[in-house]
Length: 104
Image 1 (cartoon, rainbow, N blue to C red):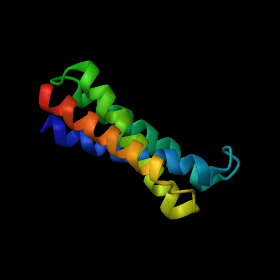
Image 2 (tube, helix red, strand yellow; image 1 turned 135 degrees about the vertical axis):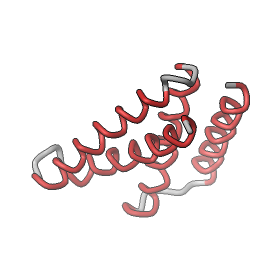
Image 3 (tube, helix red, strand yellow; image 1 turned 30 degrees about the vertical axis):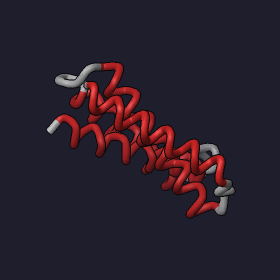
Image 4 (cartoon, rainbow, N blue to C red; image 1 turned 120 degrees about the vertical axis):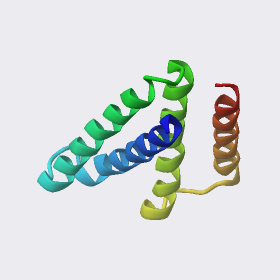
């Protein structure tokens, strides 16, 4: 169950990172409010997952899910570049996350 909670926390990290873009520097009320709520819930779920998971692996996986998700959504939502080297790098991050999961 802790791994599931950690994945949800990572997905929410992606959501609040994208929310930062939509909040335009916290100048828009609703996007800013939603972003702050997502941030709090994401951190809370991370702390719940860390009760039974190793801190290093849990934190790295949380950050990794957030980073990969944010890059993918940046490509999809904002038309950011999807250069082959960027996609290869994302694949390496995912491979590292799988490796951490397998050794945790």
